[in-house]
Image (cartoon, rainbow, N blue to C red; front, side, top):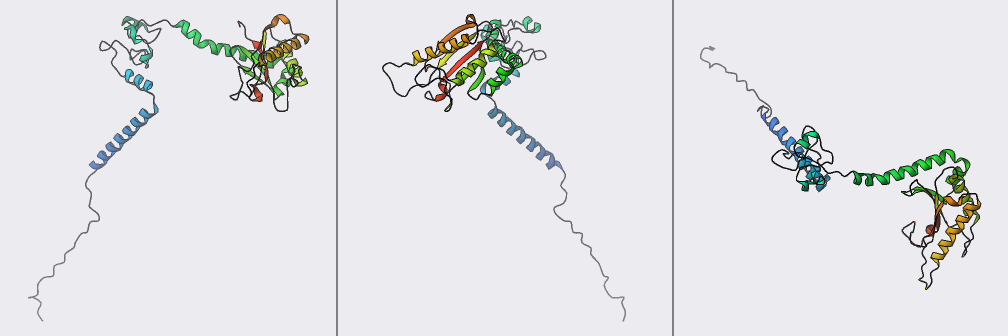
Length: 285
């Protein structure tokens, strides 16, 4: 059989491509810009929520123009020619744009004269200096006080406090420790021991002392409340105890009864308010 009349056989090969093919990387750049913008937006929202109005005002002043446009300078000292980011604290009512009491020479040339508040700064630092004096006094007693200070620190009804007035030894009552016999001004043995240790420590330094007595408030309103007489009498009893222990009378500056006017805790009826405070006064008090 002849094959000359047969049609030629044609083979088609189809190439199948998976997915949608490659469309370029431009979308990645756009997506990165979008993510960056969203991150900046949420960072801005967080900053607005985490800062105060005063801080936001300071940040705004930091980037505000400082030369002839505005008389009130902002920004940082030096490169930005400003004094403080908190320009609202810097007395803009002077009209000079000064926000610090000692502006730089460049800002003085621009009219930033500043305001002298040296006295105010001394007053602000004074409490810290007084507390530091009391801290130094406590460290001196702990270094040189020996057994008396060691025993005093172990007593659970005695604590020390640093105040602007000086170093306070707070001797207070607990449910199982009383400072005076019930209804009298006769001191208990616990109070005598505590006062003796305080006096032994006070002899080491030259500071004067003050003695004060406090009482808890009473639940009933009495026609004649004896708390003033009681606290005055108890403070005087502690003074006599200190003098009998050899403490110089000339170094006792104050003996005060505060009645129930200065409670140590929020509850004025609490037993904790029954206390004797012996204060080693800092120099200058």
